[in-house]
Length: 446
Image (cartoon, rainbow, N blue to C red; front, side):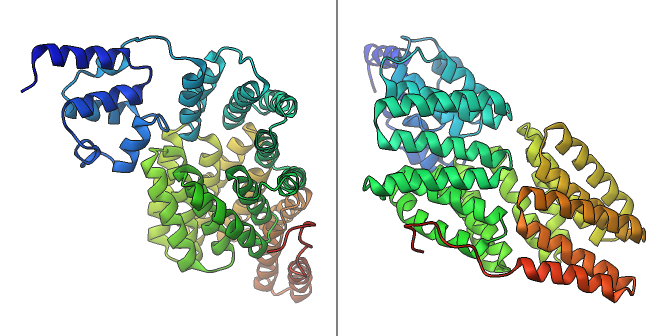
């Protein structure tokens, strides 16, 4: 048995530790526990390891369990010790950002004292901009990210320059400016290639984000090539968060290719990695995609279960964008299940929420879902109007895949009304948009 003096020294060490992860590790080791002992039944060993290295921040509920297992009051781990330096503060803020705890991350980045060198200044502005983008405060996010780009240029660090450009491109993606995002991503990864930095983690992130753009542009086959190349770097980097995002996006691309088994496999891998991070928002996103997968396969009961879980998780994490997206899918499900009134309510709720958060793409999807609901109610003329409004909106956003889908729906609607000429027109529109793929960017070979 350890002496009272030894136990006292351990307690002092814990209180004086600079980070939460260091405090947890000190107590665990002082009690002779392994990470497996601490994790068992509460979370994964990988999660405990990431907590101890301050790569993730546990939720309060998980922290209560860990504190109980460690035989310490919860307050002991949050007692104020010496004020951590800027580097540790930055790590803490970045851990919160990876978990999509955007409001907390923003506060943490703001709390970092102004760095003395350009690279650290860029890193702080980059984090604050990403947190603001997550909160959909896009104008503020853009200001911070432009500062990050400028400070990164002063630093001369090509990886930091690429990371800042990647965040700026993803902001354009979040704003549904897909052509702008594609241009930014391609420029950044070409600069990395010319610098001989094709094997860096930021290079993999750029390729993954380019793949996401191609999915939204209705080119999943090209997207899968970008994802394949991105995986070579991201798997080697071993970052569970970005691997989870990669698996998710690969799953979406396979679903668009109608390869449902491959899609499910990738989405389930993503769910496992997001569970390690306790990232409720991203778990909700995966559940929504699994629900969409079931819906495409006609598995309505399974689709309903996943979509209702997704809606609950989106509400729990304050994800308005995710809530709108899931409501659209629930509207499609209810229309297909013959619940026209329920489908219309869900579509209208989605449209209202999407308009409030200024998400043009989701407003267009809600219009298409409302058309499905009107069709289920036998209001064919009204449905045709909504479908055509959705086509115009998707065309303006350059979302070719969505245009094709809605044009097909219009074609089937007119066939049902026994108007073959109108049906032929919309089927021809869909067919024309599925022509030869766009050229690969210069210097990129799939």
